[in-house]
Length: 357
Image (cartoon, rainbow, N blue to C red):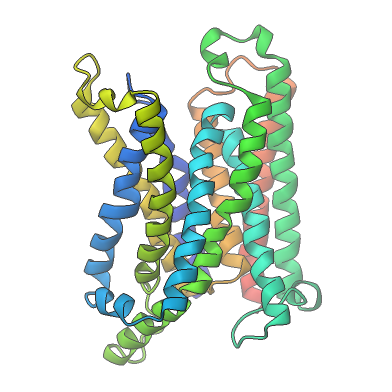
């Protein structure tokens, strides 16, 4: 039951992450930096403490009593992840929701799943799997097969993106808008690698989550692991992410004078504010439910792969629903659908792997 619950929680988190950019696409008359930093205030500053307060009332004490080393590394990985998140927005802007998310999150999935395992191979830690686990244990081998299948799905999505670029001449002006494959692919690679740092941040901040978990278990004996233990860790990681994004967006707002967007009466200011708030809150919910899934499956490769795979799946589904592939050739459309189906298969394989442990 823990495995099933974990998969469901990761699906909800993946749905939130794969859907968060949709409200941004409805914002009218604002620059990218205007809406991104406003949504980020909800994602990184406003909602996380509220979620932590509702689930871990003494979260402030846990943070204040943590060592400088734990806080420093957790914050640092948050800063690096923030760069990945910042370029994620640009990658989706230039490649579209489906293709951009597939490439970025695919890379993040591979690095986030395997790099901690390599670290723990050389630094043995109780409860953590080294890279050898994926080649010697049946459950680990199954996880690796699921990862490879997902990479095939990502390849198919990328192939669809390249076919789409070749066929741009036959698409409408609306379909061509802001689609820049060359620039987008560079941004996507940077974003994918650095976005994996979020998983590293969870690892670095695990002592804070452990304190929250032990306090809850003491008050609720015999009820398993605390579902919301990671909510305290997220606060520090997201502080780092906010710093990176705030500095860059503030620079763009001043450079382009787009800070005037917030007082531009020709745009629907109230509606834009609401859409950014919804987008930012939705983005945070991915972390909230990731923590719940991780508490059931463990903070290993399985959790990270499932979370990323669900995000890629939902992002591509939104891409189809938002008609980002409207007007493309039949081979292009076939490739994106095949990619989605392959990713669904990979999710099933990774989910099955947990039953082998």
